[in-house]
Length: 173
Image (cartoon, rainbow, N blue to C red; front, top):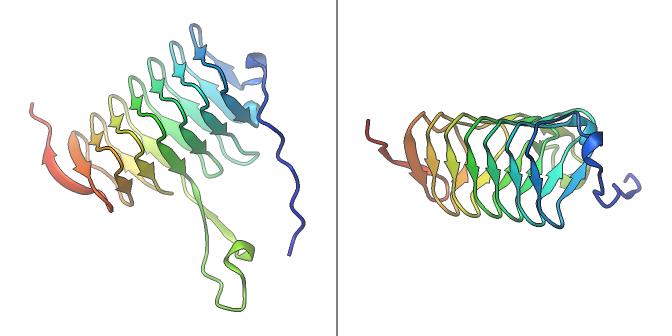
């Protein structure tokens, strides 16, 4: 088993980010790891105690006019791409890696990691506490209900909810 090591406390300076648009708001308690892999567009709000886990091999890109609620947890090992005018509710989680099955002889923690990006297209909205799993795409203008677990792609303008998230309806024209 490998030895664990600290990843640090997530302290950062805004100038350390790969890209930082004008008028970005960082509330108290925001932490960013690997800021050199994080790009935030113009007029982005990052809520209290948000954890933006940049990663040495992935990137985290957030488009302009996007709101990241308090307590969000974004782990961008496989890449996270959030469009423009997106609402990311409080305590939303986005994960981009998972341990592969390696058989019973290998502890899950020691199994190889598989990476897959998460994409959230423009004008989408993610409800409080929703979870997006590796490899999913939330289409333009889609709405994900509070507490939903998104395990597969969400079509543009769809409304989904539940665990796993299921299509409830399409948003009207």
